[in-house]
Image 1 (cartoon, rainbow, N blue to C red):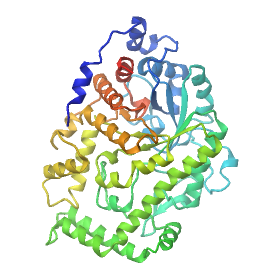
Image 2 (image 1 turned 180 degrees about the vertical axis):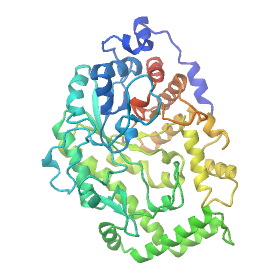
Image 3 (image 1 turned 30 degrees about the horizontal axis):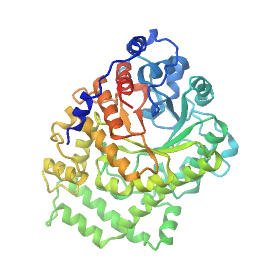
Amino acid sequence: MKTEMKEGLSRRQFVQAGSVLAAAAMAPNALLARTTPKPAQDKMVGVQVGANAFIDEGINQVLDTLQQRGQVNTLFISAFTFTNTIGGPLFGKDKLPGHGKLYPNYTGGAFFTPHPQFYTSTAVKDIKAPDHGDFDVLEKVIPEAKKRGLKVYPFIYGHSLRRAIPYMDKALEINFDGKISNTGCEYNPDFKNLITGITRDLCTSYDIDGLMWGSEFQGPLNNVIAATPGEWKLSSPTCFCPFHRKAAEERGINVNRAIEGYRKLIDFSQKATAGQRPINGYFVEFWGLLVDYPEIIAWEKLWTEGHHSTYADIYKTVKAVKPKVEVGFHIWHTNTFSPFARAEQNFERFAQNADFLKTVSYNMAGGKRYSTYIGNLGSTIFRDLPREETLKLNNYFMNYDGMPSLRELPQVGLPSDYVYRETKRALSLVQGKCKIYPGIEINIPSNAAYKQTTPQGVSDATTAALKAGAQGVLFSRNYSEMYLDNISGGGKAIKEFKF
């Protein structure tokens, strides 16, 4: 990769006016003065935070920490999620980052108070998270945040849904073998009306400044060929529920041919991961299936269109209720590793229904994620190639040069210049139609042998995003995971950058 990052850092050292604030930013948490610092910039500086943090540490204590250490001016509060990594609590035997507490169990759901009148068009209604009783994080935090001039954006994270909730099964995707998944079908009215109901509820019932939606799942083709940066286990493709089938038939797609094609694609992937090489090779076999069964691609396109429709529905719902509320979307990290995801999760298209995009560019955990992606994809359609050659090929696809080797990636991570270039790419694609807020990683848990977060690493990534022209940054993934000194690293970059 290019070395612009190092050159930029050497030009941005300047003397801070006000040594008291500088000292306070690095002071132990218990000694932080409860004062609201004057903003050093006019860009969005956000952090993702769950309800548990405010319960464990106290609302004002958390806000003190985020403002003093991170120069934060916007809270992205996890309002609806069943995923513990977003919902807030640490769990199991994880090491505490110096604040908060561990939770042995987690359920998730709505961490605000759902108002029944907004859920009359969906069978799914009982979504209140039981984790904290009647605690309503938005009701409690918004007034305190407003006193400090902080903005509040609820974060709706619809990646996986809890089947145990009454009638949730009516909203979920169905595999072609009839098994219910844990992801919502984006052609199903119960799912669509659940998400728009949550959106309308948040905009109507609370004094919010913005809203962010995120989901980290992909279409059937990418799932079956293992195009994912996480642990991969072959599962039946989705969705083949009656609503999805009806949408296919309206577009002239033969459902039975699609099922037949996916069955053969699954058989291909199973044999490929077992090392059973076709006579003509893995990629030739894969391409032949796509030619024989164009319904495979047609179903992938159908799924992608449904996915984009959810983003459009959320945007239109917000603007109809409260036009001044800023609407944005969390874009899955896979977009920076996979040419397939990049082609389908199109930024130009997102920008038509967004005020901002949070582009995930986690560079420290990104090394292991990228190497895992290469390993997964190298076990199916690219199994003919040595893994290091697969990495080189994918680097060409993604326009990455100067990347570490496959062996080095987990240990050294991705360079901060990766954040710079991904931010530049996003800005070029949206062409000013929406803002770009890169996600800056702070302490996503990883094996001790892999690249770990440091204050300097957070500072470098934050500076890289700002130098590229981002209109803001979003410290991620979850405040409860973050070591306070690393939050200070991000705040240091905010204070020292020459806006």
